[in-house]
Length: 270
Ligand SMILES: Nc1ncnc2c1ncn2[C@@H]1O[C@H](COP(=O)(O)OP(=O)(O)OP(=O)(O)O)[C@@H](O)[C@H]1O
Image (cartoon, rainbow, N blue to C red):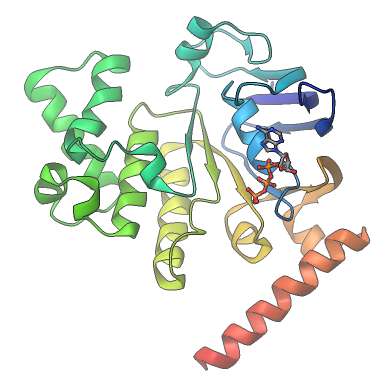
């Protein structure tokens, strides 16, 4: 049984225009799937639809069934707020490109990490403080006490993204959705973040859905890919197969530009 089974997912505007059309894929427990495509191909809307977080005016049809251990098997499409709340955190959680959208600028980092632990896992007092420290430690943040006391603007962009990741992981989700989590970071910090993500996925026995326009980044952390173009899946398969023998011209273009970028990087860093 798949952890996530997306079937015929279609996302429309109020006027009936399809932004994502008839998208189907599965994620197995512990699997690592990349959703790749150029800007505007529908990646972020798909990620939002999986969490039941589409903006007002957009509607999803088809089905998005999440079957996480210990939780009721739920079709996110059409699910009510209380069913969605039960899924978020333990079933699936999400990290976005810009951590400042996930973080409250007026609340200290420690309190923000404590919030999901208190609400969803019912932790209090010393137990809660220990869990916050453990969450910061898990994402390899140095000086966890200082970071816990800091406001988001007092820490670096890379540290903020680690804090957002710590929040997403706090309830030990069966599926982590990462939507361009490294795009806003510079190349070295991006590489560290990707390494950390890979380690955490393996440690926590979590599944990953990694959304990105950057094939070079996605191929390092995923074992399967779905290629999106104009809201439709044009190709899918094992990451290594797609990298070596892309079938569609669109995918061939993505692979070629990822190669050009890698070669340029090599020339610069050699
Ligand atoms: N609320 C909305 N109302 C109408 N159209 C929207 C809305 N949100 C997004 N779109 C359109 O849907 C398409 C897919 O958007 P989406 O954000 O999923 O793309 P993306 O692949 O994630 O791109 P990017 O990498 O630039 O974020 C785009 O053409 C976008 O303009």
